[in-house]
Length: 351
Image (tube, rainbow, N blue to C red; front, side):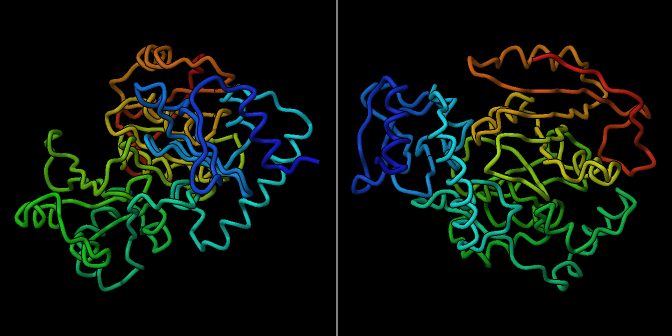
């Protein structure tokens, strides 16, 4: 009887028509990546798929990565047989056990722990330190006053807030900063930092100037394919279904979190000026092909604009998307306190 790795590999190769090779002492099957479409050279491939359990996949070109599940196999065109369904179920349990041994918070995104071969130069937020908050009390008070709440220690960790960039740099032993000392001081004084989705950089939000041109400043310490901010209390990376809240900015998604407690089991994502398709592409790359999406729109973006964006990113795979559009009836964006937010109805967008 064939082992699970052989069954999985044979099913993938039966559906795949392209360059392939073995790597890492024959522990990985390498094929061309369906997410980034790989390099221009047809005899190069960058998507590594484990041949031994637990089964993971990783593209070393675009970082498309995750646990092998039904969504990933369907993306490759694999026909899901009862035998494969059993292997997928077993892999789900194996991945959960593997994640436990890595001792990584479940709130971290999938790229925080699913790659067994490469850690993507990931950074860490220093453990919560009350003295750091006290030193940066102006930033803490800004958040509390903006959302009319007392931001808790747990929420500071959930939102992946970096109050003090200098402490962050020391904690991660970063030697080569992407900015000079003077600008680092400006960022440390006038901005609040938020860790990006992959823990590879800080998205800094200005709290002093209203100038849109200087609203955000990114400190990225490696090349990340998606400039996205996310946070989630519950994100099951072994499932293909996702409940998602999308808004334009970081403060928008935080405002929605406080205004609608019933949505706290959702994953929250900020587009940061890159459009809804950048967010969809990111979560599709993680294997989430069944999504319920709630768009909390800025007041100046009509539902027709989102429809136009969505139609530009249609894919020849079975996507089960339910998308709803909402805006604030009180005329504000959503980066405000609960009393300034009201949603009267939603508009369903077709995909």
